[in-house]
Image 1: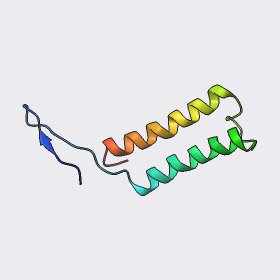
Image 2: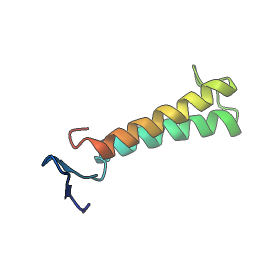
Image 3: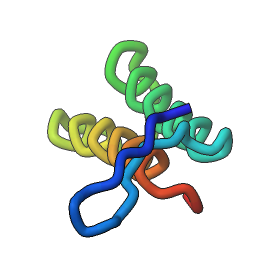
Amino acid sequence: MATVRTRGDGVKMGLSAPNLLTFLISFVIVLAVVFAKYFGAVIPGLSGESATFVGLLVAYLILWMGCLFRWL
């Protein structure tokens, strides 16, 4: 469990583990990018170099938001 510290204005901040569904969605996106990049799988939208970067960025942002917001 993350330590919750109170800032000067009384707002509590802390990180939480992402929901299982959020983690799995992020993991599936990463697997799709890896299979498209290294194993030659044809996945629509993940064919170019910039598309693989954007795919990994989206997966990371989903995971990051899952850690910041408890409802995600």
